[in-house]
Amino acid sequence: MAGVAFLVAAALYLLSGGFSSKSETLALGQEVYAADCAACHGADLEGQATWQTPGENGRLPAPPHDASGHTWHHSDELLFLIVKEGTAAVVGNGYESDMPAFGATLSDRDIHAVLEFIKSRWPEDERLYQEDM
Image (cartoon, rainbow, N blue to C red; front, side, top):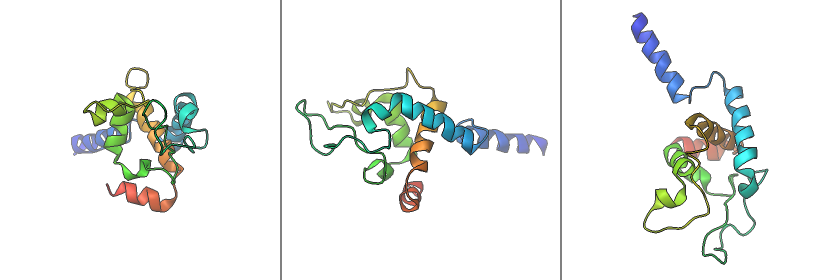
């Protein structure tokens, strides 16, 4: 019985990204966002003003991560892969993007935390929609 309890606790720990509390997760996520995401996606998750129109290089500017964007339309798994591997690698077929891969500079824990921080800023309807994916 103790073995089952340990396995359940270990699974929950891994599913949570290895965090001991929600506040710890959000604090780390906010720190990572400010350091690695805000320069392109905006301090308030507002994205770049013309995010829906390709720039001169043919690439789309950084989208907002608030409710006005499309981040909440994607599953946790896809969002994690985009941050870790970069948009071009995830989309494939020669797609070009200014969204770099952060897998070499951010740990999986950091990526989970920044995604939790972003999701914590969404209105309830968007959070619930995204949770059902």
